[in-house]
Image (spheres, rainbow, N blue to C red):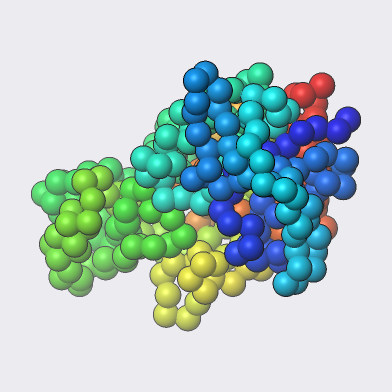
Length: 313
């Protein structure tokens, strides 16, 4: 079954072909006989009842420095495609949210992955609040007094932007820290959004596990170890990926959240687990496919396409 597949993603020339999950998804699509079209979010538009994009037919290959070929630039009606992938990286700002509204207009006749309505209404650090029994103590607030009270209650906390990504702006404030007011001042000067605070989980020194779920089912995990002297384990900031298996607690977490993800059309999801605690549910542009395949031989991209092909059939 050959499908017409559009990839809405960041510029193709900048991807790391050994780590980028969108690149791996595209390669797997080609191997299964699907045709690729590529465009960046800024080239998405609505015009007189149609959702359109200007972009290029795309061919991918795993050759460093020569990993793609583009066809002639053209304008397409995304409503004529079988599948559109919503795969640009955050920040989860109004630009990102607008793309979900536009893609909502063609879904589900055109299958948008992940479902844009629930991507928009289930950002990573908010969807997790649905499962308080699985998460460390958490606060969403902009008010300094509320954050002070939370820190007084828990002593050692992590403070970060609610809609941040890639480890940017993540601070650990231990019981001796005196910078809360200054950080709060900095954050509220940048934007009008709340902050998220969580009780610090000491197990993070042993790694922040990324568990990959496909259609609500766990297919494997990788561990991300923080660099020496670093609180954050994100690979963008020097975290080191390593092989790891799923624990009984990981499976318990997945069993609790999996049906919700499946119901909301979140085909490819990456959750973050520190010790026994769920800290994020990543639905916007999850990563980890290539590392999982390298460590465990698990081709999660194939499983993703099996699910999509079944939906299209």
